[in-house]
Image (tube, rainbow, N blue to C red; front, side):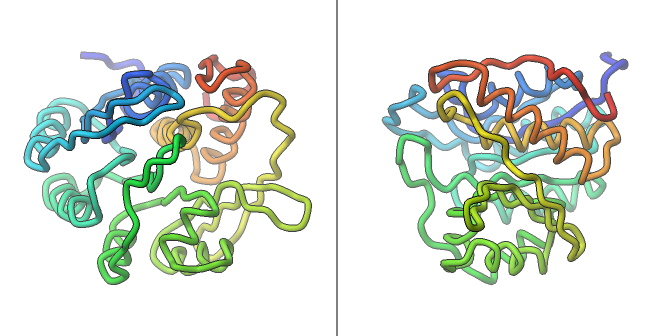
Length: 256
């Protein structure tokens, strides 16, 4: 059994382009010196710029994948990406809480594909709050935070989410400054965004949340994990001119 690296688990969709989902997460885990495991939640039909459809994996099959892996591998942190709906996520978290109570969850709420396909439009507030109470961290961008909380102010939405769990708010714009903001136990840490030279990248949100998960698995604090993930994502965004980014080991790793 692999023993030199810690394990991280992604519970995510399969994107055949490799730019997002479980394949992107696995690439990120590998570059951050973590052994990546994956449970598939959906099969998508897409490239980096076109989305044609999705086939959802039944919940019991997702649970069997996870149970098979966690029966053998010592996993402390897992990220959840693409999921069919809040009901499925709620049931999955109930399963994980019952079977693997020490597992800590990072949720990347994928509400829309980068090519414009909407996965989720309506959110039951009570169910959402119950979900948030069961996770360590949620990583919405500004528009996702607004949609989740039915708000027009992303920071206000993030602070509402922070009532129940830690929040890493991405792509927050205040004045002329763009930043990501970690809300942890009512404290705030701002990560100012440097200029991105290349194009936007398909799957950049997946990469960021996977990098946070990897660094937490290596023993980093949440704040340090977010800092390293921010740097990894910056280099990923600047890796190539196209929509599919390249994965490289970043030059300076915290807690490497």
